[in-house]
Image 1 (tube, rainbow, N blue to C red):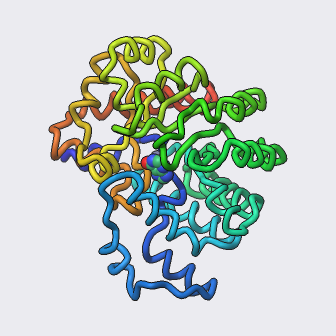
Image 2 (cartoon, protein in one colour):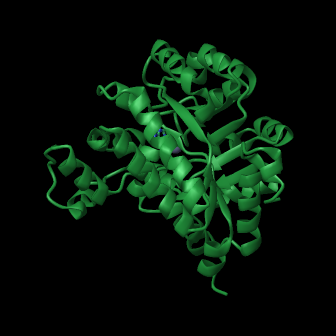
Length: 326
Ligand code: HPA
Ligand code: ZN
């Protein structure tokens, strides 16, 4: 059995994927046409050729610009359903996807339009594709805490459509502490908490410490730099906190697939998981992320099995469902 066969057949869970980061170039074109939007590119290949990411800000500017084609509930439904179809084709059976409502309300798209379209796709994916999912609302950390609080208020009528909240976008000078109050309120509402601690960002160790001591997160997105501090590693392992590592994303953003770092996490008892982050942009879904680790860092079937098991274990699915995978 080839490694690709093995990876393909393994039932997988994905815990770090931005739905807006699954917007494929072909879909940008069909949505632009339907919504009467003029694009500056003539073909999907031209769009891909313009993907030039070397750090987080250079990625984010392209990511936010492309979202402008997403306008109607149907658009968000299609966006999410297309992702779930690709997930199903790779035997990803469970997903906790992120979405960025502020990136849409700031353009005049209603919160309801976004969440209702995504929710309908989740129901369809569960019913007809066998892909279960629980949605995570991400706040944009380069916007104000007040804006985050307003969006949490907007989410209250839809609270049953959410499992948790996250924090993404530009991390520079936007520490977890900025959002301590909003996250405390989210916790009171019964939501799980996670935050991006993107690789090699300014003040990253302080950000990880704030996640642990102040916010008391239930998971950490990326979190690679914790390896620089033994006490942080011990505490993350002791709490059984999941770390959602995104190898191909890291190869684009910090020029490192993080294979060695993932191995170190496993050896320290930290629950590392493998994820795609923004697969349409980095041109790599789950299988391609695992295969990059196989091809460039010689990951074994045992290591891949451990990483996949970790993902089910640190997921926020109900314990009764979880037991079927562990
Ligand atoms: N980091 C921060 N913000 C993001 C990312 C990421 O990897 N993807 C989409 N928004
Ligand atoms: Zn991310």
